[in-house]
Amino acid sequence: MGFFKFLKLPKHRNFDYNPQYWDPEKEEREKQLKKYYKQENHNADAVKERISSSFKRRTGVTDYNARKKQVRSSNIRLIIIILVLCVAAYILINVYLPTLLKALGI
Image 1 (cartoon, one colour):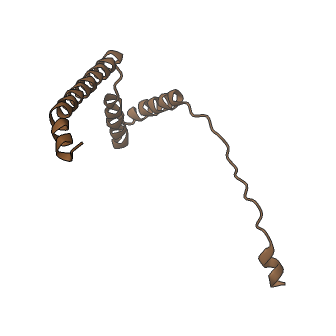
Image 2 (cartoon, rainbow, N blue to C red):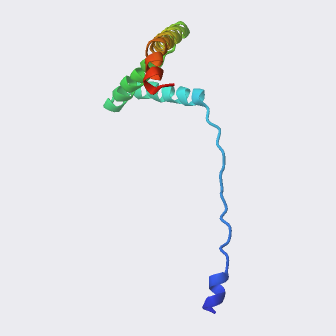
């Protein structure tokens, strides 16, 4: 009998996934409403929540022009670095490659 159990295949496992819709705007509205309701009580938790939410809002770049300026400066910096590396590679190839080839006898 034990031999037949050894050959028995396990049953397949079901994966039960229920996708949920997430609305960040609705979540933000609910947080704001909770914050205003807590302000009426003036408790310490409400003050902590208000301070942490203000820090979270300040960390994100909300100004489109500021974000655009940051991206532009980053792109310019990247182009300058690429140009400097290309010039350095060109100089190294023209100066050191002939002497390296002569040393190797090619």
